[in-house]
Image (cartoon, rainbow, N blue to C red; front, side):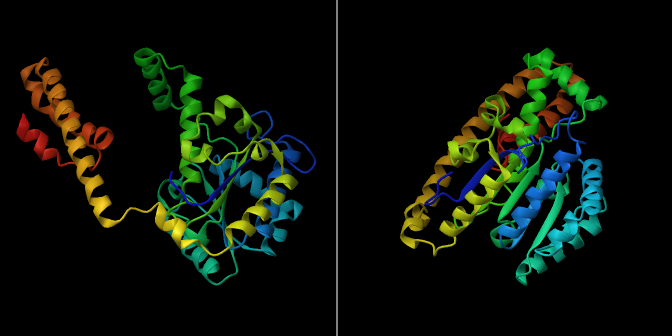
Length: 324
């Protein structure tokens, strides 16, 4: 990602102020100290970061358990002193209304916290750009429920076809979803935000190396394996630096003008069409090996997969069909 300033502050928080490790691992997720440290981390962030904050849990059930404990211990009441709290539910209309009120609260200067699910509707398609998302927190690693029949069938296929072990697939998928959540806060060249990965497992090299490069490029040694109090100190310094007026000259130095954009779009489209023709021809050859009555159905299915997974929206699929 090309930037003119360090617009992202990724922090891997591995323990709370009491130095107790925090994680959403099955063995420790229900530990009172872990749940309390999650709550104190969110409270400190809400008290330090202006405007909007978004926090993601690994599942609806875990979010309900954690919120019940926070309410019992008075953490929710303390957060309310700094920001309003909204949350995602399984009801689409309720979630949309909560999002609208969340944005109104941010626009009014009151600030708000939005509690969501890593694999929920908000994580997949809602942007928290500008002041709506100055910080995003991930409470744990969103690993899928492994008893799902669909997931087990998929993992068996990956192992048989590509020799990808179950654990490798689950970890990669979880970190891909984590990156999806993190990406909600950086939506333009002028945006800036804070990313807090609250789980000591993020600090392991095999996990951290699977995060996308646009996150890793901003990671520093000082932002790894930190406690809650150290993270808050770094957040204060980051906000003080990024709160300054934007250097327009530096911004313009990384932005393409209209001529450059058109030239790159033309080159990209040409390359995409060439790749599409090659893939389409290969699909055509493969489908010819099938029985004649399955030929047309196979082509339609494979072209649909090609348009969604391989080429995207860079070319018109009808062009490929005409070539066949």
